[in-house]
Structure formats: structure tokens, C-alpha cells
Amino acid sequence: MHRRLSILAAALALAGAAHAATPSEQLAGYTAAAKTAADPARGQKLFTTTGTKEWSCSSCHGSTPTGTGKHASTGKAIQPLAPAANAERFADPAKTEKWFRRNCNDVLGRECSAGEKADVLAWLMTLKP
Amino acid sequence: MKNKLPLLAALALAALAQAPAHAGDHGRSVALLPMYVQECGSCHAPFPPGLLPAESWQRLMNDLPRHFGTDASVDAATQKALNVWLTAYAGSGKRARTAPPEDRITRGDWFVREHREVPAAAWKRASIKSAANCSACHEGAAQGMYDEHSIRIPR
Image 1 (spheres, rainbow over the protein chains, first blue to last red):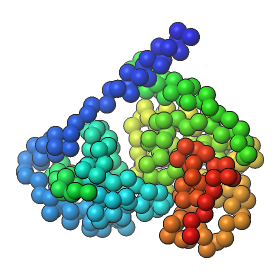
Image 2 (cartoon, helix red, strand yellow):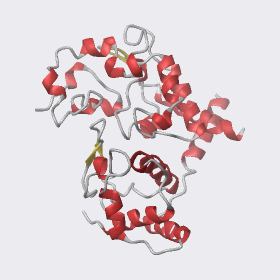
Image 3 (tube, rainbow over the protein chains, first blue to last red):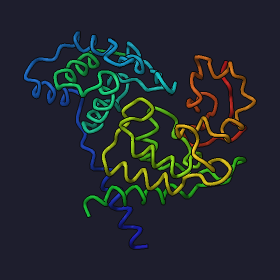
Image 4 (cartoon, rainbow over the protein chains, first blue to last red):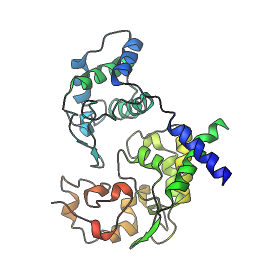
């Protein structure tokens, strides 16, 4: 029983280990790494343009991601991506990085640069539900 | 010790989550590991682990960067924890006796047989789109519930 409790304690400690950060703070981080100002218009273009593969970001998130998207392959509903429409988005930098890594790879066949991430996030932050 | 913590955490959560496991009309259903729902349930329904044999889950978990044409990569600790849980609850009976083609649940004999009454045209509806879109018809799919009384095939 004692062992089970200590495992549970470890689990709970880990669950609380995610570092929260606001979308603005994450945008500031990407902008600093890119050493250039973010451009929302460039972010929108990147988001809605088909990359080197079959998809664009919009293929799953929709061209106006304040609404619910739909996964291009499985059809599963995808909750809104714009932070103003969904408070869970861009709340955890590790999660943000994980999805940029996966999805840029799916669309562009490579990781996105800090500047590209800054542009996309800057555009998403302009969207209001 | 450091590397083992996430694994222990996953197992602890799994132990907690197992409590409501119960028998449905299609056999025993397993409460879903929260990490599994979070990591795998964003792009598709969190499929019940019993629908694939362990060898299929292990192949899938070892190739997440190339997961049916998409990058579904996770960090090493998460991958290991998911692999442990999926292997522990992998299917062995009539639903998953052998690995289906391409390790796709939807191509297994059991899946095809269970869905034989669904007309071919229904699968193609925009509201369904894919046989992997369990939630389109199974209202409890996000929680791993697939009983026959909560099926609603959309027009």
C-alpha cells in the first residue's frame, strides 16, 4: 500500500510539472529566437498554403481556426486552435513545441523555424471567435 | 531513477484507471490510460487496446514518426509507457488473434464482421469520412465505450 501511494505521489508530481506560459510569452520567446518581428500576414499564408506534402495546416484546423477543424485523414473533430477560442491552446510550451514538430513535418517535411512559429502564433492571436 | 518516473507515473495512473473496467456486450472493455487519450486521441479516437494484438502495437509504437503517413512522434519516456500499457491490454481473443493488414484495426476480420451491416456508401459520407472516425457513430468512443445502444449513424 505504501509503495502504491509513493507511485501515486510521483504521478501527481509529474502531472503538475508542466510549465504554463501564456501565448504572448511563447510568442516573445519565438520572436527573440528568430531575432526579427513576427508578421501575422506571413503566418496566415504559411498556415493556409499547401506545403511540400499534400496538406496545409488548414487541412485539419480549417482556414479560420476559431472554429472546429476536422482531421484530414481520420475525420476526427479537432477543437479550435486560436487561443481566444480555446484556452487550452498555447498554454504549455512543451505541448506547443511537440505539435509544431509533428505538424510542420507533416506539411513541410521539416521542422519550422522560430520565425515561422512566431508568424503563425502571431496570426492565431489576432483571431477572435 | 529519473528515467523510470514517467513510466511509474503511467502505471500508477493505469492502476487507478482500471477500476471501472467492466464487461460490455462485446467483451471486457478497459478504462483508458489518460496519457494514451492525450497522446493518441488528438488525431483519432483512442482505440481500445484489445483490438490489436501486442505485436501490432509494438510495431506501431516503434515507428511513430511514420504513423500512417503522419509524424506522431512522442518523447522516449512516453513511448515506453504507452508501449507497456498497450502491450498489457493488447487483444488475444477473437478480436485480435492475428495482426491485421498494415496493423490497421479497420482491416481486421473482427472489425469487418462487426460492421458488415453498415452500407458501403455510409462510410463515404462527409460526416463519417473514415472507418477510423469511431466517434462519428459511436457516441462514447472518446471514453472507449462502444456498446450497441449508443450507435447513431449520421446522415
